[in-house]
Length: 429
Picture (tube, rainbow, N blue to C red):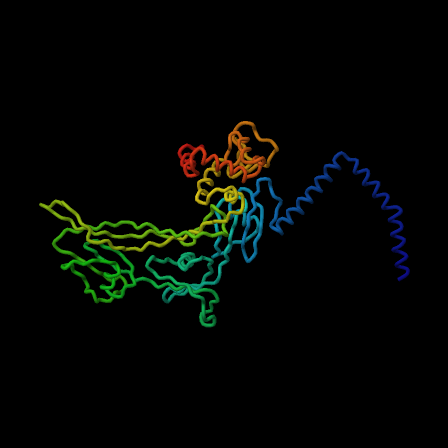
């Protein structure tokens, strides 16, 4: 052991006294080469860039560019704040490596442009769902918010008259499902001939008489019903309602799709998402014509029957006023005017308080100088110095600029609504 230690000590002494000074001299000679400094500098920069990129990918927090917007992403019981340039929701999620799996719901939609600071994205993760459609059972994953939307997301066609309910799975051992159970109660398809007009309708009525009552069909004394009113309804049954001795005409008309809106403070103001797709309905209006010498001289409505119920479209509207658009509230702009102000400012400057007329693309950083002529700021005040009447920080403070914009809108046009109407008609204000 002592012999090995002496050998190691002898080698180390030789390296320190002979080889190390020789290598130092070689490095000094190489450093005098004209390309030495650029090569070393480039190598160091590449190393630092790699380290920053690695940290950014691990933390989802890449360095903020000058026109970046802050985005708040809520997912998997966590909330992340990340910078984003001019991009869409889907592109940002892909960039920060947040996966969207089958059945997940993203609000707003993946194609939505990120157009404001403090933009909010909510990701709802899919849960196990069993869809029971008669004797057919389908297992899937879904994060949709309504029973009908869950079924449609799974590719199951649901008609307006079908009943759709959601219940928690009560017996895991029996069903093998730990999530929710969506049950579809199918309506019966009936072929109805209403005064000569063939119609396909769906109903939960048990008999022909129940169908007539459910659809609000008003029968005249001499109207004929085939089959009789007490006949049970079966799938694709034929039902005829006829009136003899008069000329009957039927006109098919659409029923407007109902729209239900829900305010959601977890989404940014100005964004929206569809939680349930809706559809228009259909009704048939039957007329009885009055004839004179074979010519129609009058027409009266016998009845109007809904042959297809409309489905309500459910739309969630973002109401969060964080971010630059939230400055409207701080500037004293009334909530009823937000839409008008947002439209004008989006078209004038893209919500950039430091943009001068003629500048395009992202939002530039404040250069310390405002042009003496031309538009400037959120509302493109011409010149920008006019906004000094609202505050000394007019060049950079969006709230100060919005106060001036509001005074301009009401002072020149009488209201934000009137200013909006002028802008839409003239593309300026």
